[in-house]
Image 1 (cartoon, rainbow, N blue to C red):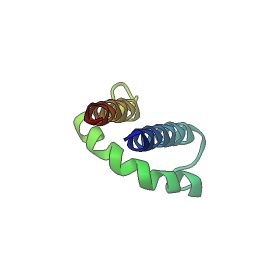
Image 2: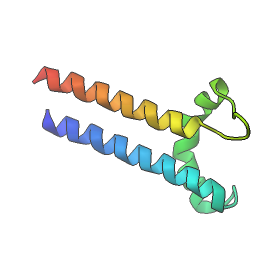
Image 3: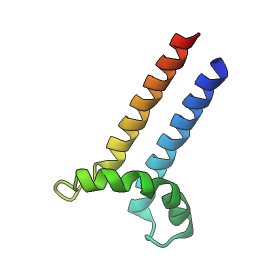
Image 4: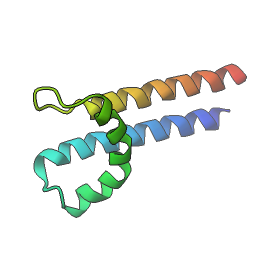
Length: 86
């Protein structure tokens, strides 16, 4: 079970870092830059449903922040479930 918890932690960390990097690259790189597009293939499908529910407020897009929080919460819940199975 510890291996499952480590895998969940790793996936949550990787997704959070990818979302953060993708958001930062949005300020510095053109939309069609290859690096930004490569990361966008993973991140955009996760961000689009949130963007439909929470539109940009005052020109600021809060969907990356919301997605990171949701991923963290889901990770905590899954780890709690697997810890209780031990």
